[in-house]
Image (cartoon, rainbow, N blue to C red; front, side, top):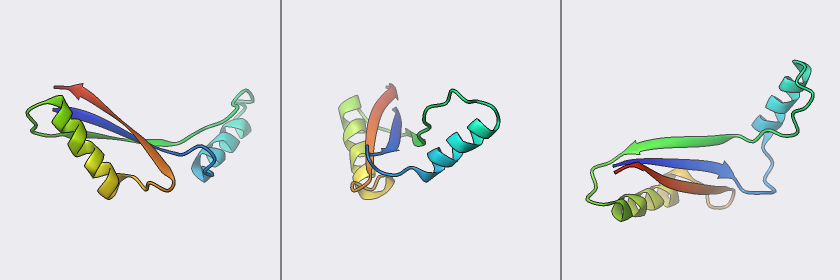
Length: 81
């Protein structure tokens, strides 16, 4: 089972890396960039019997390690069963 877990900052949380990237793009002449947000995607391959179990395990991974529930939200997508 192949699962993508995308972690991003919650709305309202400052994204200094995204802001610096936007600033750099503007300096490079990309004046039409309105905002930049940084996300991280983990592609996790696991040996699971079904998609529901893979999603359940990925959610547990997010709770225990991958995401900080105070500042992050996450999305789990099964890429290949």
